[in-house]
Length: 274
Image (cartoon, rainbow, N blue to C red):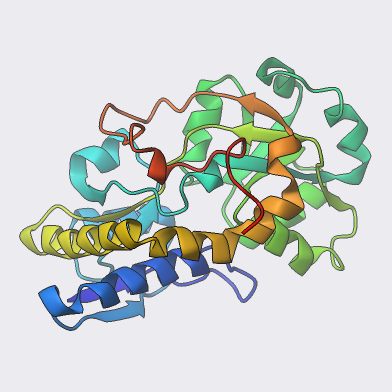
């Protein structure tokens, strides 16, 4: 069973180390039932190209990690377990230092319409923010977005709580005018699933991952690995003490597993002490 996933986009790209570790644990857990597996990175692709390869089942990629859209729901097969417990839905702004005083006065989503947001051109977040009337500037390169922010091409770069600390530390010497905004959380539900081709083999690959992840949930391994990778980020960002600015995610349908509270991070109830 071959699991071909997208590689990091640069030497500084550490966004998905936790996700691929969780996938590996799920596959290891299911060896007795499903047998051996191969897990390796694919060639570099844009998100649009990744979707194309999976939708046409070319074999160049056998899974991707993404939030739902109507197109994905219609043409691919998800494992409906949010791998990061929706922690990525708690966004923290990377900004230019000179704009910090303006953001200190923000109390509601309407006030964010005075700012421009930067996102990757293929990212699902683009449609989510625009549906709330927010102005979005897109870029074609992940690394280039940090340069665009530093150079004033847009005002706010919303980054998931799972990724912003690493991203900032890696670039602070080169881009010294950037800062992590200290008081806000920009929230919308953003469950991130593993997606597979809608073919018999794609469904078999998905069934194995689903079985493995549910076994990890049942015995506490899922929570332990989440804590191992994310607890210090949650602590350093003080997510529970920030003002939450909420918008809706129009991409989510009734299939979203909101009722299973094991799958959803909540800064109000998450215990920072082990």
